[in-house]
Image (spheres, rainbow, N blue to C red):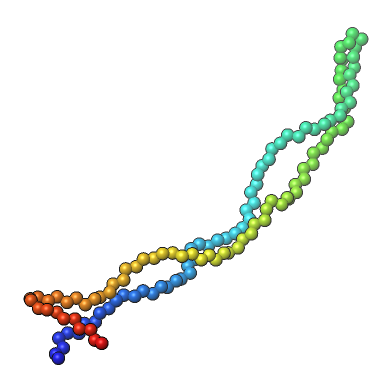
Length: 122
């Protein structure tokens, strides 16, 4: 038997490498927002009114003396709005990937009128 050629047949295989990569940085703080409120509060007063009246019924003079009035005191208190829970969660999911792998196969071309016999070893 005379050796004519030696061919090596190859095929591609794949390897999966997973790397955890940070895609963002998160900073968590509370932000204080100032909101101006405007409102009207009615205030009660007491006044002493002294009128000088002439004999014909006309008001000659009016004296007004403030006796009492409501004073406004505004107190601010904090009230509970909500709790905020912050945590990291690890999730698993599946992603589908498709890859084309090449595989070499032996191809035999024969020219002429020849009968090719395939003998499989036992």
